[in-house]
Image (tube, rainbow, N blue to C red; front, side, top):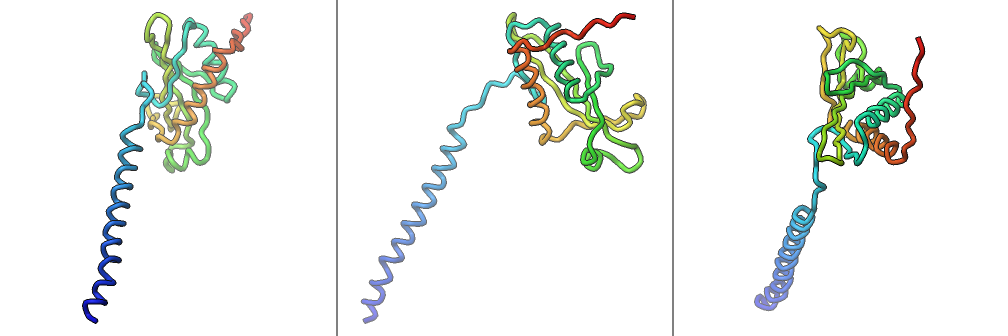
Length: 177
């Protein structure tokens, strides 16, 4: 009777070992397939957001950038010689995440760069910053935005790309003084 009760438990034990082995094999295979077989898009930029523009002169790209950022309530401000800089007041949540108690509100700043990839293609790329005391060059503090803001910047850059493809941006009217 003792042998009979042991023989009944033995197949169930072997089945559970085989099932565990199968689960492990399938799990590891799934991880290898998911991570090992993914392809990445070629990246032309290591900045937070970028687009590649084809067959457009830099003047058209600048005009389109100004138009799109103005539409989203950004104002242009002074930057280095090879960059366009736009900024606007940040939100209350921006001030909570990036600000401190004594330096006032936080402003969102976007620095945009252009560089030629080849004779037909230009990379337009940008980084986003949160800035305290934006109007004081001596005391302003720029903090690179967290990765969660990449989507917001990429949407702006994609809108620039769409406007350029559609040709829907007209140069701003000349102001007479």
